[in-house]
Image 1 (cartoon, rainbow, N blue to C red):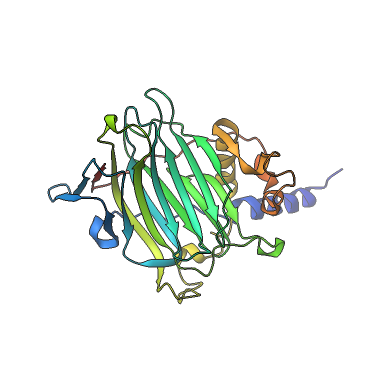
Image 2: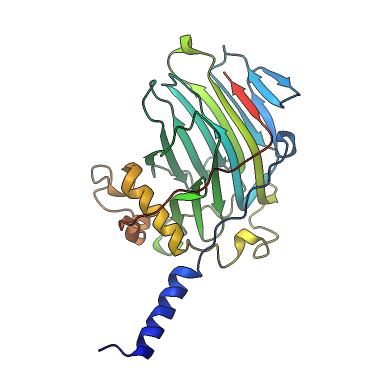
Length: 302
């Protein structure tokens, strides 16, 4: 029979494990587009009243990038995706370094036929190697209003968030021989391109928020000068808390349509990082996060 003292000890351990290890990221700060970003390609006209960028529809792609490069941080964008028949379009929001063995952390929104759901694909490249795709359906229509898409990246993990709901965690598994993005500064990029039917153009995605809270570094930097001093680098952001894990389980159970960790055709042997995170396949209930607000708008048209 378990004594009262043992119950208290057990509950204390569970509370330490699930109640205090993690914390939600800080609320993103909305700033003007030009503070952190600049256009990169396609013909551009600027509507200063809305700070909106429009791109000539004869181009097959368009995009913008951050002015600085970063080693770790919190990156957030509010996006309203291409409405209507968007099949063949890909809207991407991602971090990427600038060499042949590059690191990359991706959100990719795969367009759909009218009435069909968008697919959100995430991927992580380390040392030039990717093939870590996970795909989900979103639990809302991402073309109707703005939703927040965020990346939290530190020495311990990479977390993908949709409206404060964690949809994926990629942990540092260097001890298992898995590379982790930790020493290549990355720029933040967004792009919109179409691969098929240009008769449906123009394709319009809208952006606002433009939040970056990262350790800015030159592309040659190998470490963050403020390592251990920023909020996203503290102990409570080394893992998710119990509530966040329950939300992650909800996404896994209800909306996941592909996970490379469960693809035995491509990977007869389970990738090492998947073995470490098998506990994420537990089924638990959760709720979604609140939609954020913002002030400033960027419209991208191709």
